[in-house]
Image (cartoon, rainbow, N blue to C red):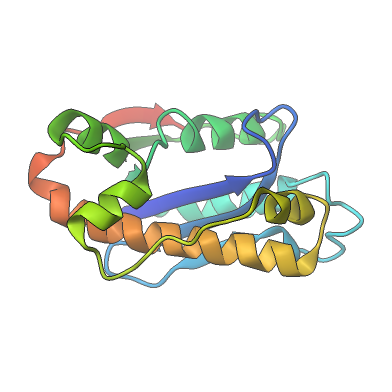
Length: 180
């Protein structure tokens, strides 16, 4: 079974008004593949249309069976599904999904169920980065430096997620089926 960590960074929490700024896919013990709005020709002109990024991300994900996320069952997966639903040629694919947020929430008793709290509790060697809300706003408006900062944040998230996944593997419940 091919396993990948998945994280999205978006301009809004709602997919009908937001779009994907950056997405990272990290296979278990493999290199990160990053998708960023900056990586698309003419992205300043088509800033409001993340369709090329979404299509490339979806094509890349087709090589995996299990998607590991953090709060992904409630955000990343539905957001990506929503953005893909806008693409007329999209045909949904079934994946297995494991949301490590649910593992942390149900199996541990921490003061916070955020990934940064889990990272600190487990003493992981990788660390999440903080982001000022203005950086997100600037990235959403097409600022290259801010977009790169958000993309770096996304990379760190999947690194931390992979380490947390390997540490909590004995506690995870069976994955569930999702369609993307």
